[in-house]
Image (tube, rainbow, N blue to C red):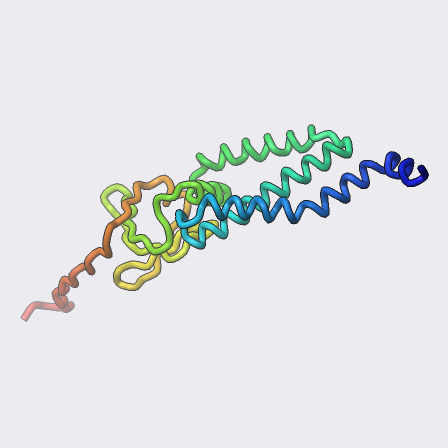
Length: 187
């Protein structure tokens, strides 16, 4: 009877301990479900990012449930969340900010139109940039130009400009010989 009284008086602690011990199993189950859903559909780089995103979301939801279970009000957390949401909304329209590049990275993560290894042409008015996507980072996309040059393009511009995904590697531009110019009188 003494053990039952102790268990009833400390039920929150016992439930929290059981939840913490079952958390790795929950995380593993969510990752297996993600693996099953995305098998063969996305490349390994995106799969790693999706796995990280799922882990963070599951941990966040778990912590929120534990806080509610312990009786902690989430009003402050809701205010923080709405503030972050508003800040992300502003970041979508800011042209040259770190936040707009991070937000663009999230959009590129969700959008599955181009990936590492694709040849793309980014059109900016009458000009364009061509290259093979080498890396898609938090702040920029790294392209390898046909000539071998490395082009670092900001994420916010990559998302807002028209991007053509090319079916094959573009041809190298022909070198036009420049006439030799000399200073002084003509001979």
